[in-house]
Length: 266
Length: 266
DNA sequence: ATGTCTTTGTGAACGCGTGCACAAAGATGG
DNA sequence: CCATCTTTGTGCACGCGTTCACAAAGACAT
Image 1 (cartoon, rainbow over the protein chains, first blue to last red):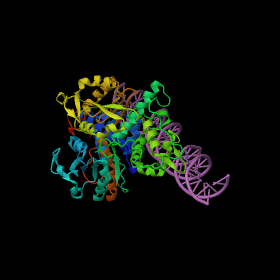
Image 2 (cartoon, protein in one colour; image 1 turned 180 degrees about the vertical axis):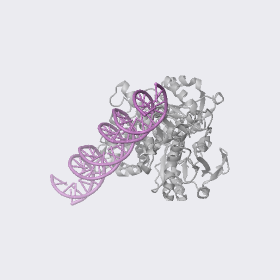
Image 3 (cartoon, each protein chain N blue to C red; image 1 turned 60 degrees about the horizontal axis):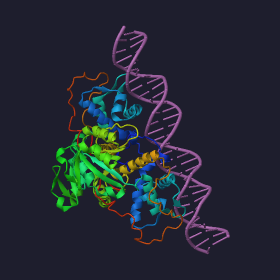
Image 4 (cartoon, protein in one colour; image 1 turned 45 degrees about the vertical axis):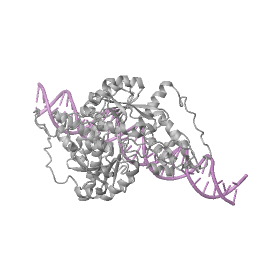
């Protein structure tokens, strides 16, 4: 799970709650599977189970789109697939650029499913001149210098940032200046963008840390250790004055973190 | 942003709200950056800006952990880093296994930052016999047959699933049976797990679809098209009866979707 | 020691999202 | 045409999360 949107907090677009929008792709996937099995209709209960949500929630979600069901029967699969696709804007083609063709960028580019849902990789962009021209997933990598031209020429409005954290904000600024209005950010940085630009963030490190939290709690409950288990002595609470600014003093942890390629920020 | 947790909905662990837990890694990252610059203290306002959140929210979040600040001064950076790390369980070592060493699995394995925050890649596992023994990121890939042994021998409790969707549930079941209690799922599937097992999901496709929704809305507002812009004719609303079950009839969209490697589900 | 000024910690109000529970709608059978 | 049965659509209540706004706490200067 990507770690939430950044801007556009609760814009409640056209009356459709953000929480509902975030679940529509889930429904769509379940419906597509049913469609492939030529299932004509589904009840809210069945579909909810397939999507892993509550049936009441699903019905309420659909009610924001309109009354597309038939009481006593359920929902027509094909029709619902179309309606949700249209609502999500998947009936049109969305060219996407991927910036930063490292391990992750290559993995994204190689993902074949891009084309299947209205998304099309328009270009791969990397700052390394040695990468230029080299084909990844059948698409030649282009140099960052071409960024603006690529975006305007192809009318791209969605960009994916898979660069190291250090380059992310700079790339972001250039994308926005070139006309990009939606960004999917894999770099471990808080991007600042002007109003009107959407940023969504995918952050593996954060997901793992959240898991670790719950994992620790489970373990702690078993042992029954109310506070922390034995281990490292807690450092001085530093109640009043922090140790004088001694620069470079405590070289605590300074591992290769925060500026790593992407995928797993800190 | 990974697309939300699955189980353990609102457990409110030890009084710390889920929403707060999800933000702690964000604060930790900002604090670590300050620590590396040897900044001794920060105000809630400064730190909030760095983390991209509201200062009131940040203070309330910290209040769940205890009173670690000093009024009129702010928070001691080092001390706060320690407290949050401890709260998140990052002061201990978490061995992690990655299952499914395709493009994405390899990207994850190559990510150097794993070790920097208490996470350690204990093993890479893939079902392809041809991969066995082949080193990825310096770690030899092991075959799925070894899965149970690897997990029990290393005391692994966190697993990352980067397999195709078709294999995800099966892999998940085996991980859980072997003792895994936290799963980070990159496959485009709703995993079903027993109580007590946490699942978090990272789904690129969903993120892109959410962006597309907002993107469409922006474009629609500009043009002023209230409903949908011109384009494909809306299929028959199918008001009453859906077309008879004619199996294999409508071979609508059936592209290579849903069972693709990972990273970008549908 | 006293006053001023900064910043935390939190009480309270508000809004969104979730889930319950039921009435309305419509299909289906007689 | 009427009765029954299934399933939707939604009004309502509840709880979590966010935000405001302020009193309390403490640093710092005089």
